[in-house]
Amino acid sequence: MAKQKKIYLVDVTNRDGVQTSRLGLAKLQKTMINIYLNDMGVCQSEFGFPVTRHETNYINANLGLARMGVLKPIMLSGWIRAIKGDVEKACKMTKVENLNLSISTSDQMINGKFQGKYTKKDVIKEMTEAVYTARKLGVKYVGVNAEDASRTHLDYLIKFSRAAKKAGAERIRYCDTLGYDDPFTIYERVKLLAEEVKLPIELHCHNDLGMVVACSVAGAKAAIDAGVDAYINTTVNGMGERAGNADLVSVILAIKYSSGFGGKYVLDERVKLSHAWKIAKYASYAFGVPIPINQPGVGANAFAHESGIHADGALKDRRNYELYDFEELGRGEPEIIDTGRQITAGEYSGIKGFRNVYDKLEVKFKDEKDAAKILELVRYANVHTQRPLIDDELRFIAKYPEIARKIFTMAP
Picture 1 (tube, rainbow, N blue to C red):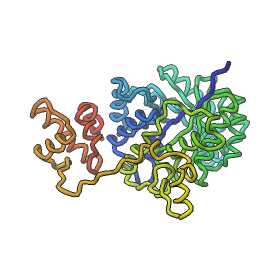
Picture 2 (cartoon, one colour; picture 1 turned 90 degrees about the horizontal axis):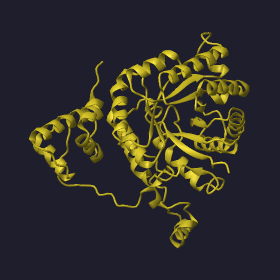
Picture 3 (tube, rainbow, N blue to C red; picture 1 turned 30 degrees about the horizontal axis):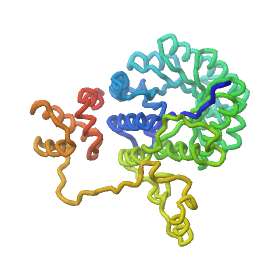
């Protein structure tokens, strides 16, 4: 009997989410996102740009955390252009073992972006050369991204994907770069692509037309119906360029509870929805963007009822007006806000205030020299994030000081 195909999650908050205009994350915050994604059971984090110099220490530090077993079993993958030189540079600058190679495939972008530099034939040549180079240099996982796949002629997309497979790619990323698809077109196109190429399909969708979650799950359904595994790209709270990417929590809820998916299509069993509330709150704090009041699952009104009919029905039986329970998302505990004296640790902290903060966290130091070393790192971390550090960030710095030091270090 054939093994049942599954839907896996590849979170791209640390690659596409941080490209949100006017926003971004410090490297410590990106590291914390990776830790929370790993705790949540997400199978892969596209964690950065291996050829971007200011990412080098962060990338190598997080790969160090993976080797230490802290970031396990999550796969950490880098994003680069599908160009031989970028592959060589990524492997020289970092110890990255997994790469997604991206190149535009639509007529619009080949003509309008490359402007005569590449023909369709050249695009395939550049891509395959990049894949061969990655394999030659020992990259363990190679995925190929067809940018603007939704506006690419399907015959050419199939030809491109077959060439990627022959060169050694393990997965094809179908990029709905402009949010151009609808759930019906993406289903038809991805199903044909998967049937022809017989490789797992990764769905990377954008929300320009407000259909990003619907398109993501429809594309995943198509891949599974065609007999291959599906991978959905998500970001925490739907962050991303322009109108954003597919929200991590909304995608999980859609797969688990929508009428056409629940009990019929299998989500990676490692995913823990109970971590949703924690990661959504952290990303909101780190990006400085409030969670919309009506955000599925984690919005302030996601479980709020005011209308008489709704309140009455929910009180009689929550299933009358709630598809899922708030406890499943890690919600329900009261949040305690200290309104009295507060001592915080920041870039100008002294040793006594710093010790007070860590004492409350029940973190002990070997001696005064050790405490002074951690205090110095906490100061740098506060400069780095430009906002008060949360408890988990303070614990991380105390537990992995050398990794933290690497993350905070940049040399322009």
